[in-house]
Image: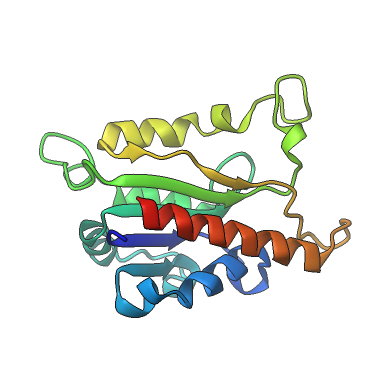
Length: 188
């Protein structure tokens, strides 16, 4: 496995079923234990949303593969991950005349949605497929010169109070997602 950095961008990580299950699975891998897989949980590191840009850019400089792990909120990333992207993928680091620190790295999005897969299509509830909704992030990847990897998405991962959901099923689906993510990271 290349040096793999997973950025966890879940604002309520402790109450998460999916993201927490995925992260706990990865924390137990040999690669995590030997240091070729690192996980940075943004809400744990920055509960005040004050990002240490230098520390984050150092972590990115170390990585060959960058994974953004998050729940899909309002057709995008949660606020803490968006803030991280805005501040860390800065001019002179990630883009611009001298901003080549992300160039050539692989970028993989790993995320979950509450809605079912069939809701993400033309004419369906969300009107667009998931690839179309990711265009702004894909363009960010293009601007930085990263190699865009096919996203890993788990649909129907509902965890909202009052909404029908089976925690056991959600956790099992999250474990499968974690295994797929681990396998993708090993191949990257």
